[in-house]
Image (tube, rainbow, N blue to C red):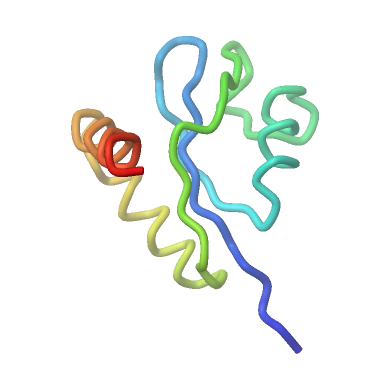
Amino acid sequence: MAQRQWYVYIIKASDESLYTGITVDLNRRLVEHQEGKVGAKYFRGRHALGVVYSEDNHNRSSASKREAEIKKLTRKAKLELIDSVIYHL
């Protein structure tokens, strides 16, 4: 049986903050955050604007570990991570 592919993502919020999470369906999860019904409590009082960074090819364990690593980064380091992908496409 094939393993599910997990994504690690960063969403930019309406207050310019950055939210990091994991999912198996990036598009569905963004919609959930935007609609606010089953999304993170983080988005109550702010809106999810869009995914600004994502990594794929993770399993559940590696996605959770990477999410924790990213959450420990400073805002500046997160922005540099986002910029590194944008400029190297």
